[in-house]
View (cartoon, rainbow, N blue to C red):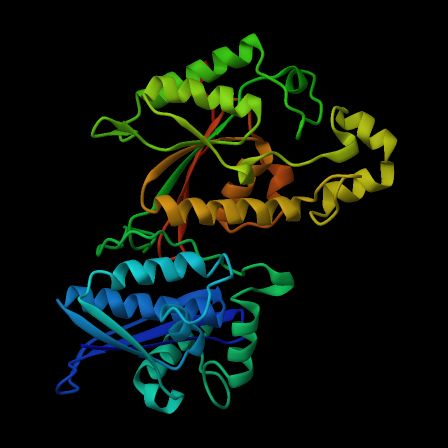
Length: 394
């Protein structure tokens, strides 16, 4: 079979959509069409999503070999192995496309001029029309300039951050849509557990990179959270515990070890889950930091790009945590993971799930040893299932 796919964005990032068509290689008969509006994403994301939709349709039709034809030089060269996939937001997309392609006896990628990709282009523009409510003026869809910008940016939005970060695991997606949300595929489910009490948290002091252990109460909180998780369905599959991944600091590793002991698993660490570096404010209370650096502290509370003196901004933390999330999904896509971390990384993951702005960091409260749950779907959707649940501590 032949898969022709395209995607575009009116704005890059902007209202976007993809189109894909599957044809009989011998007769040229159309066997399937796919199109979907994507909200606000980039050309590169839309093009990959079109390819994934086309390959999925070919799977459903029982294809054994596939010729993929696209006018996206970036996608064709990357999946042919001639160009490296450097951008972290493109890597999970490419991984899912490769996973789908591995199910065929052969897949061949071919670049074609846009004029020869008119069927998929039309479907993509119809999807973009649905996203914007009207056709674009002049030549529809992505322009040459927009496509060039998207390829150069590697699929990023303003200030180098994704407008809607793709979050695609490497497992083959489900065929059925999820009720109400319309999300498709098997989500990667993250159980987000904050560590238990430390002396620093008991005194309400900024506690970032300082490596402090749990207090006696903190150990009891970790044990209570572990007991709850041990009674949760789906965390032990065929006698094997789900991955338990912690920040590399002592307080999170101790909390994670309690979970591992309860589930019969082992603790891994990921540096991307570490707490914010509060720099010179480490160990200070809120009032002490505000008195020490009044103007800077006030700016820090309202601007996520402002770092503490000698520390890192919440924008930097966001990029670090997003990269960690993408790496974990690329490795464990479609599974349930227990992540044991700190306030800011957990809030950041919930922010991604809600597609919210940085003000959420200042408005969402997370208690010690609290449990939150967020799911990231292969099609870019997400669902926050739980936030700051401490019922196990009652």
